[in-house]
Image (cartoon, rainbow, N blue to C red; front, side, top):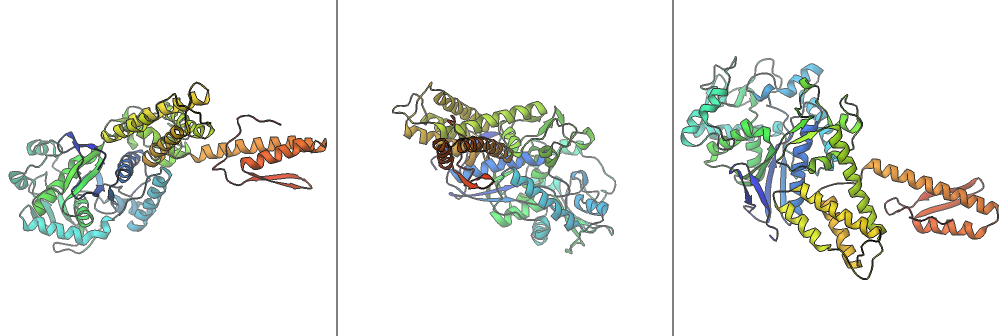
Length: 503
């Protein structure tokens, strides 16, 4: 490939040149949501981060199979091996079928992702639809001696695995540290070791979600699904596994242990993790009163919010920080992002108002090269945005008459803005902005038609015809009737308010 993309590999704790196992094909697996509640800010960041990666890999010529799972079974409370299944608990409280709960929140998640302009993955497998694959995974681990059955459940033998391999190589932990920080929980006496994790859980009588297995009627452990589904859709070895930093331990650490225990080596070449977000400097959580769903954010209904924030403001704000840095949500920061996005979109609209000149006094070609350089450096989106703001200054200076640009360079500048703003960063013009523009168009057209009506009343046919012709040229259809004139736009897409109105 022409582009030398480097990405930070959490496993080796350094940036590495991205070399796919089977170029031009790339296999990418990203942990998706556990669907028991409305999508929130915590869901937005990994979705946007790996959407950026998906878009960029596709742009530079790779054929990407992007798998993002839906966890609809097996994820117990507190990410532990005891307690209720998160979805089953919600179903019990709402007196619904578990799959009814799952489907409701899957639909809500998809709707939120669409509004954030997050592309759909190539495959979106559900944990509940891959019970057979998870059972087969457990069988392989048992056969290789790294798991044991206990009271109808099957647990991964962490201590035995650690003797042959290194448990903790992703998170940087050693087993002694894990043991010292692992609580002895009630009901876990069936484990050999508190650090052992469930591969298969025997269902208690009250547990709704259960499937038959060689060991008991039960359900798979949370960690099993990603290993089983990653292998099914991407093979025994694939390129990228992504998710939030909170998944490094225990989830992704356990995934590595499962893959090595079942097939002798890790499945994943590059592990990528986005950093966490805070709200006004605090960890987000319901107990802190700062847990904000995406719907609350878009409507401005949460008590902490001073206003509603558009999906594109959220996307732009997220991309203004590097995916490996922390992000702090606040009204001030979001309002600044809103203004920054507006500046960028103004520049995009300004490109259509530029009249080319014979010579260029600006360096356009270096802008595209700088944006590519930033993207190739571990998806450095904030630097890309900084370069685009430099491009916005170019546009403003040209419109102000301080600089000039040739038709060829203008084409290059338009292509660069479109490529990085829309295709790669995935920004869109907000619906709110479109509505504001449409309202502005409407007011201007109404004003002009009023002037035209006055001209007709004064039998000033030249002015009347001039207004009509200019509006038609701008893309408006005018119909005269006995009660006055009506208008409609042929399309708002290509309309631009004239910078000078002559009546």
